[in-house]
Image 1 (cartoon, rainbow, N blue to C red):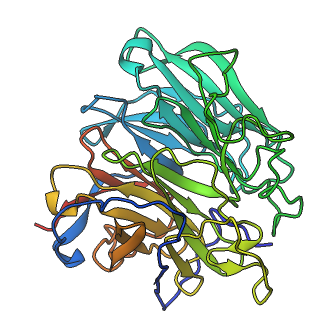
Image 2 (cartoon, rainbow, N blue to C red):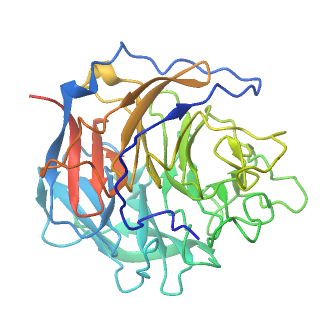
Length: 399
């Protein structure tokens, strides 16, 4: 079994990427836009902060341009303001979380109306290793959460790995929750292709209706016998970071591979119901390697790379900031193991203009972005890189 997230970090000499032809599914996509980008050598990773405890995400509350919220895998959310850490955590659930290599406090999402309702959501594995999605409220002190909470979702995890852990609100105001296949290796329970379980899926729920939530009537499997209505798409192994393009509403999903391939999926806005292939396929290839399989009904990735380049993909964002306008429309992603950083743009449903940023984006010590646990964006759309070792960087023009 290969641990897919937060493994020991090997050092690979070969960095490679394969871009797949667009899948013919009857849809077309607009170009992500923006003028041709300058060479990656024109940019650098600007150091923002170090000394954090296993950070796995950096987030901004809607419209909040003064603060960043850093999720620490150990169970705390810290506030970062102008590079300085607030002395007390915004939220501390460290006594609740399990501490396995792929477990812990893994995700944060602010409600789109956070400025008025104060609601935010976290995803963590409890001390039994099971997934819990919980709603919290900010207190009268904007730098501290209150004691008010309610559990939104509980999912039993059969193994300790492949928990997914990310969650984010879509442009439609619904909460999207990505869950891995339940763990072990090779999806032994067949969860990825089983519509009767939430594991191995992208979920879409309405936290503004129902108790504790409702299933949107337009979810693709609501009326299918034996299927869970919460499912938006399926066939995922371990979606480690996904994001919506702030301009187009398209969804980009990075799915961690098993033996050979790491993959990126692109989903045009509003087009759920897709089968991304696991465990019939790993990336654009039949699984296990060398076997034959039917690709009927499957949506293949728009980008992939093999394990000569890395071993655990970390999904990022389509850049929509203003500081680097020539990069608008560029999707960034990377690899936890090797610190690989790549980008591509979308044209007619396919990834084009692949670029390698690995040599350009170096840490303070001059190394690659090894331990790249997450990307993030601030309220202005600027891009950040998060290293599990405790450092945060921002993509900047080389000065």
